[in-house]
Length: 435
Image 1: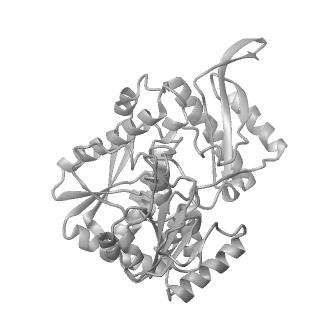
Image 2 (image 1 turned 60 degrees about the vertical axis):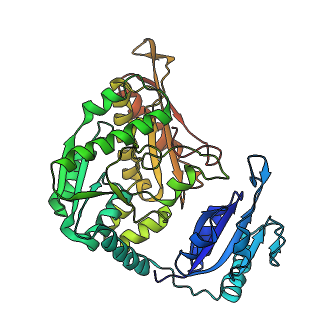
Image 3 (image 1 turned 135 degrees about the vertical axis):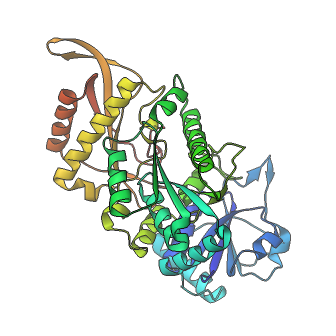
């Protein structure tokens, strides 16, 4: 690994990701690790130049205050402890500064003066490191990749093609939860334009049957994730030399799935849903990247802007936007209303301004009037948010005339819908998706 590293040890701090990003913004690589990492495991991490001990209100595990492995204090690493009072650390602070500028000043002094780290964190070095690591991990074996056509899987595909070429086999699974025209677009772009080694699997009926009468969102995510792996295993049996499964797991997926000092926000399909009898070894080259860094990686790999800045789409697809137990009727309402929203955003240029926008259809109805008669149908909820790293998000303030036009189209063109709402909730307290 070419980059120097600053390690953040999580002792209950709620701003671990913000600190990790602040360090990286200074050109120095950073990783978050649990408070109980051993000195031996820490010493195996490459090019560690210093340690930030990040304390906070969650610094209790099983009723007892936590601390790091005491031998790390004597290991010779420059240390700074924030919101933590270890006896063996002279560089201590009660809290982080209140402003980003003051935090940057503090970090610059610690990272470049105390740690003597070099600002060599960039995508060129990252890509070179990952290419070497993938080659070493995979050898002459073949890798199976779930290619949804989203940013994460596209960047993984480009990186693996650079590393192992034709050893990569891409599989696009139509699970029946795709956006309107999504599978057709994936086939056109990747198979016809990029000449990827692509296998298309239509498993829509299979997935919908598995999800029948399942309303719990965590259970839905895990069913979808597990079924994805099963499909890949079946495809792998038809091929020789498949030993690895590539995934577009990124850092927010890991953080939101919970740590030892923070409860899980939600299970991610590529973190919490893997079956215990998984027969593949995982290849996850984007594991430590935030979303904006994934995009930067894609540009470094030469992917077109339109692909790199493609709107994010969750692995479970419309399954987490058709709230509660999925029905074909509501699933089509989500699909059609989402297509209208995307079409109108593209007409006004909002598709280039807004980070993520979509519709959801909940599992309840409301009374309305349609065609001069009483109706009892579903609402469509519009969500449009902006974010840098997917850890926080703000609401896009859409002009009323556009909102009214979108509402009018949805009410006229989408069956079984009689109401349109706009979600004004930022993250936090809300998450980006409803499920």
